[in-house]
Length: 470
Image 1 (cartoon, rainbow, N blue to C red):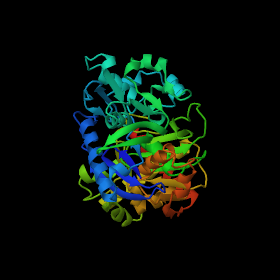
Image 2 (image 1 turned 60 degrees about the vertical axis):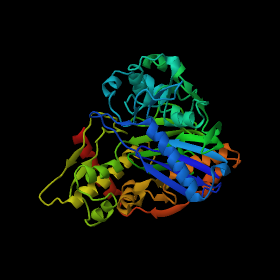
Image 3 (image 1 turned 90 degrees about the vertical axis):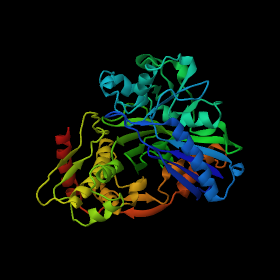
Image 4 (image 1 turned 90 degrees about the horizontal axis):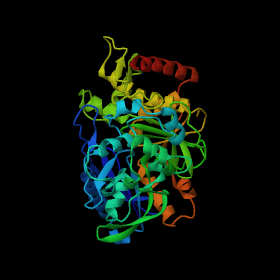
């Protein structure tokens, strides 16, 4: 039995799986978001830890499995979110700074973009951990040797092992702007650039292997798998070969294309990131499902996110409306932290149904922008997961605008499935990674329903709306 801990931006989910990746029990708990100033996003790291304990117990209860029967634990996590804590007490010195936080945007403008892109595969952006960590270090009087830094994976392993293990895996390390892709280790020149003392950094380990031993619910269980959420989803979707592509739809949308062993700088507008068995090109769309949430909570246009599909299906198109959801700047391939959201094409005949459909289409257009930048045109299916894959209108339009089939994972929580798979591999339950590809199922497959010329025409109109937003 495997416990997969999926600690996300808005919730924590735990799954209990068997080695065939069948989900036997699950539990979820929402996580509070804190916005102390415009552009600031924070989490309570202690609340994150508490949510893991509660959902782990809930998933085990749902499966009818005691903690003593667990073979291994796999962890996957929201990436880049930064925690700084005291080694002696394990107490965070400040709230965790979430990946969406923009407080260091001005600082990032002065960074040497060519060096960072060549060394890390990233772009200078407040999205990543380095400037968040520097901001936190500048506001504590404690010396470096009394502090520990980590992304959420590190924080959870520290707590699970009672402070015995201070580690991160190489997929999460590759999202900090402090690790070199070619060496897989912390880079001295980057540490000097960001004024980060090496003493605060965790040890970098592989995503699958014996990482530590957890004390969980009265039992000791090996931690044998760990990866950032998007890399875990790439693994969970069975994307093990160059060219394999997945898109995960959550708060944001994250598109990864397996790129083998390449560590050269990525194409313009994209990132190169470590993944299991090599490296991947990544496009990070900051706002996807969050656009629908904003229509619901911010404007009151929707009573529920689920309502978006039926409203969008009630109109044939957007009536010329475009919604560029730059509510937290624009990520790939634009990388403009200063961009702001834009709704264009409004007229007297515009109804809320058009606006909702434009929001869904805006998600799909952003995914195409990423794949266009990656040069990943082709006919192979894009494997998709995440909550928004339940939206039939979005999935059909995604296939239409990509001109490629879209395959929805049978288990939409591919991040948790990926963590479970890595734990199986790390615990020796699998002899290699191939079972994840064999065990992956597909619930729906969407084929393009419009011509390539029509898809290009729609996309060109979208790009004009993006130009206005920029």
